[in-house]
Length: 219
Image (cartoon, rainbow, N blue to C red):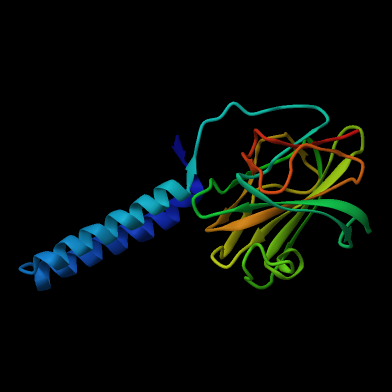
């Protein structure tokens, strides 16, 4: 189990807050035992939350040509046919994975290929399961095309708690399936927009793991 580098700024802020909080209690209310223990409890809680949120567990990743691997940990909350209007301008099968605050929030590439398209969209912070979150929330859109020219689009979508989306890739570069592609901080979701003829491997409410669970297979 590793602590991801994206978490260091948050960890430093929490540590500084804890030092200041407990120093104030020590100098101004050291004789009030309940305040001392409250300060310790708040500090421990915040540190534990940050450590678990930014964890990066070691895993035996699944690499499969023709397989579309889940880019995130979480639960499948949407499976439906939609009209994709940003890049493909055609009907696609949308599979959405909701990440709760207790899930690993590191995102991974679902297939290998060329990163054909990337765009950041500022937006709202509706709850991640809201139907309009895909088109109105702050989000990034990424398209990867494999060697057989089979392309998928996926979106990192901010939720009510998520206030920052990080994406590591650059357009027109080679990317590898299951490699790190980004991070969404504090609760969010990832949408996959797949060709209609894929062989779906999940159903609603299934729990999936990033880099391990197969969402679908190309035909």
